[in-house]
Image (cartoon, rainbow, N blue to C red; front, side, top):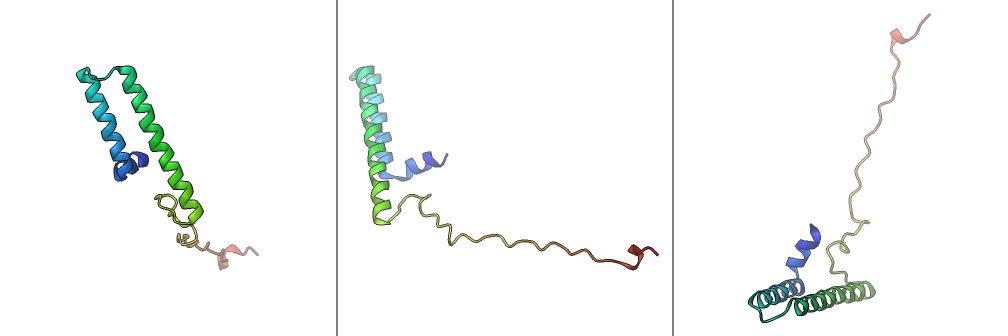
Length: 97
């Protein structure tokens, strides 16, 4: 579900979705064939995925990560404090004579 949210948050993803919707409307109106719609959609998806990949690689090379998952720094993530285990204590009743 995070991928869909990321798609709506980015300008590039929003434009890709709008272009696909526009092509769908043109196909429904008969101005574009289904084969042309398919080809258009493949190109839009390919360009979107390629641009996202190039942006991610460039961010890794320059050290400017822009992806929400890439910003998660494990060094600053607090680790849970371990709960101390109680030490067994002996009571006078435990000793048998």
